[in-house]
Length: 151
Image (cartoon, rainbow, N blue to C red; front, top):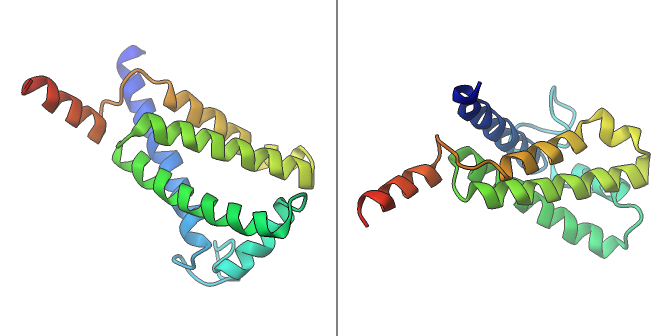
């Protein structure tokens, strides 16, 4: 089993990274327009309506700020996780981001909503990834091996 753990960790890293990129770019309209097949938001306006619902317990100014920060974080975490660069930090940040999103969903829509969309699962998976000992197929590993060779 131990020899397959690096494959599982790579799969987890890619799955979380791609998911964050899909969500982040969807609200910027990269994948298509609102109403098209497999498009959740399609533009910033539709995403902000959803964000206002999810964070209905916050002042409107904070909703806008948090929506911008979350979008930037999702895209950055997605890229870093796919590349395996600063993997531990990206995975930990991803876990925190997903946890706050899950809590916001639970407050606004009830606990079933984040459970149905597996948001707590993504958060837990991100934390699990953050505490892996090393990341075999990553830029982090390449840099570490390079540093060990030439020190």
